[in-house]
Image (cartoon, rainbow, N blue to C red; front, top):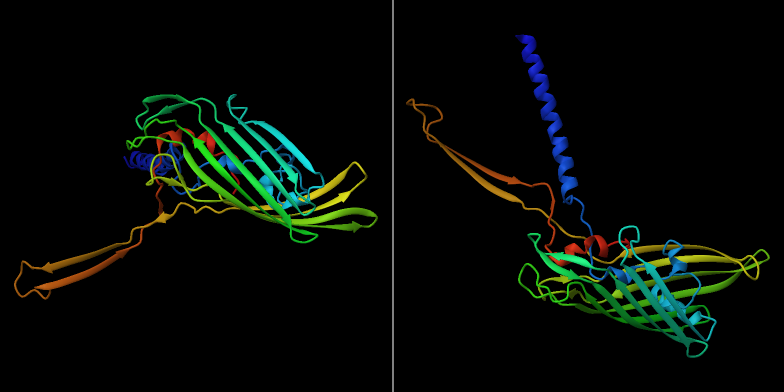
Length: 336
């Protein structure tokens, strides 16, 4: 009899210690982990690396040598371009292993006004392919082809022989759902906004032994602008404001080859979702009425003041369903 009870208790202990593990894994697999405060923004395509040169260099570019795509990486570099005029056209299939209808296209160009200043323009178009939109209950609302577009201009000027300053501005148009209404009843509409960049670039030629080279550093604050909305003033989203700081060292191996060592640091200037905690204050009162007469605790009043601090809990801000349906497509490759 004793042996049977021991087996039963051991089995019960195994079940009790095993169930929480399964339950915890189930929560993480079936939904988002509330402890992970993921930063999301509208129009993240503005931070996607648009050209193959800097994409192949792990998305560094704030201090590399200037070219036609400098407007994206650092507007201050554009004044140091050696040519009079230049253009660049880039095309990137997006998430090609998952879908076949997404792409990022980028057109950029520049024109040197004089030896110390230059003007540039850029146009980027992000096609997210056909997406089946649903409401909060999973009912289909129809198919739509979300797409984002941004058109910008840049002015860059040398402040000295080695230092340059540039300013860019752009118009942003983001159409994620057409006019399909959200769950709250608000009619969907394209998000419209503006963004401004301010970039600083320093470049100086140096000698490394018998090899000519250069050292450069740069900083850029990208996408400074107001929030945008897709349905109303009560549901506003940050644009991906980003800070870049970097340096680069280049050495000319010969007339046709240059070796560059770049380093960039990026910081997304968007608030992390806050953590809300509720402090609980309580009061307990008790009054003792003993059953026996002349009890020493008779007519005793007890008073307790309680204050508890719960574990922090992340509260996710609700969003529109058509934006949630684009989450897996529209938030990839965003720098942190």
